[in-house]
Amino acid sequence: MKLRILACFVFLLTPVAIGQGAKPENGFVPDSRTAEKIAEAVLSPVYGEKQIESERPFHAELRNGVWAVSGTLHCPDGTSGDMETCHGGVATVRIAKADAHILYMIHGK
Image (cartoon, rainbow, N blue to C red):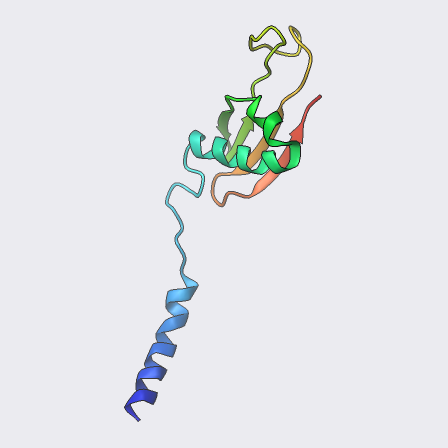
């Protein structure tokens, strides 16, 4: 009988414990470093690890609760550039700060 009462007590408490997960005050993506790591993690399987590594460093900017993360375009001469000084494109990812949802992902040419 005591075992049944204990089992019922544990059962009644379990939904409360399971239903409440951690929700960080500053969101699941609180800073640019975290956003950059997430971006690299989701980009590598799609565009290839070698390609994504070649676009380091990644840069993240927060706008209206969304991190915009982009790679760096490197010119053939080893310098960083833009589309006017060298040809190519970089990966871009948009990540929701609050819950880390990937909202958008593309790679330019």
